Length: 215
Image 1 (cartoon, rainbow, N blue to C red):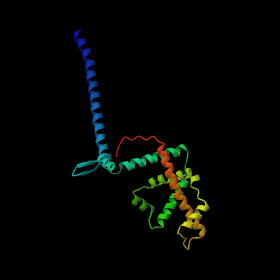
Image 2 (tube, rainbow, N blue to C red; image 1 turned 180 degrees about the horizontal axis):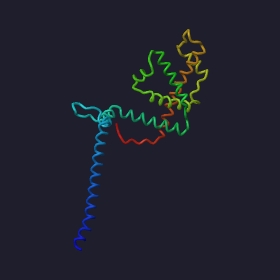
Image 3 (cartoon, one colour; image 1 turned 180 degrees about the vertical axis):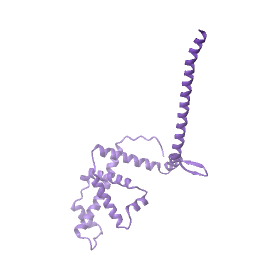
Image 4 (tube, one colour; image 1 turned 135 degrees about the vertical axis):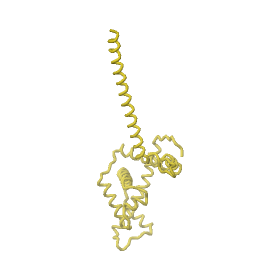
């Protein structure tokens, strides 16, 4: 009877040991797989952390960012703040533009650049911009133009006053009507810039802006 009791007790213990070993083995395999995955991910994503290496010594992207912040951090931050304020206010007032309006403005820009013997891609490369960034700027400007449309109307009297005080004259290949339209567009753009700056100043003055870094 004692031998039978010993045999019945040892069987569960053996099963428990076997189960623990299987669990431990599975855990080890899982850890190894995870470590390999992390190593592979770090290799292919090393550009997220390391900007360059010199004879094997790394230069981190963080150090590059810190250097850039020293040189232009304040300007970049203020630009982002202005952009956020503008987009938030335009959305609040439900001012929108269509894709057709953006595409039309893009075509105008491409035509103007082409008349100077360049392509849009070349001009953007010189400015360090992408098409997406240009379209974003166009979108904001077109929305602002709609918002301030009633404040940037140019009258015939204003065009007459400009022509009277200015030495600018039309060329032979431009009709008097087209010349007046060009002057009107020019005055309209100047007034838009003035109104946009005033609108932005008022917007910033009424905004609650808290800074957590000092440049």
